[in-house]
Image (tube, one colour):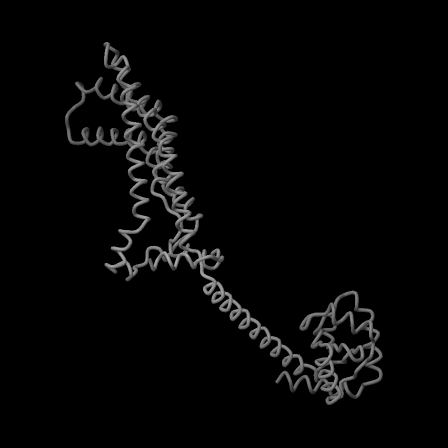
Length: 368
């Protein structure tokens, strides 16, 4: 009753986070019948393409061995050689079948898991040792459904074997003398017939089984409204943490920019909205470098700090706007602004010679 009541409260669709976490725990739709279906399909394909070649190679080996058997010396080395050749022939005949079944098993597992690893699925879980929970699982609706699917699987396989055997009983092999080679042909055809019919019968069982597993897993992963709200609050908390980290990084960058303003050649202003501090050392910089930039209140801080250290300030609205929009702190100015900035620097160098004489010593102090 409690389980039914809890399930009735789960009215919300599972979120992406819940689906991802459940997948990592191995909680997704799984059907062993699907794996069996893939393996049978692989076996059918391999037998259909390789049976003739495999039987021909085995027959040729047997014919050669029995032909030379009377003249073959019985020694340890010859017996080892013959056993090695026999194992090689058998391995060549069986290897495609082994590889196909292994590949089909991996493919079936990948289809069900979405080709994603589930590292937590194999971890030891203490709750699996709970006897009360285990007894409740034995008496749950899932067990009855799986029992019904197993009975359906048994009926399907039994029906295929029964009707297939009845059909084969009318084969000439059981009523008239036939050649020895016909026996191999009969076994091949019978195997292909049984496997193909098993695939069709199991296909119906797999559709029912896998469909039930998908429905059951989805129902288990559904969430209550409180769980959705809780997850949303946790997600918003993460967003707030990231936002705080971005603010800290921005403040750190602003502090570094303000520390570099006293070593600037000049500050280009808007005059009230933008401020960009530039530096150019001949023989060191290939072009004027952006030391700091800001808008509104931070621009005023840049201008105030520049005034305290005597850094020349030039008002040029279009250049200031472009420098703020296109320039990157720590990098050279855009090439399209070379001419405009060069003209401004030429004027500043002529009118503030004493500042640049002191600037060399200031940069040496900062570098030290």
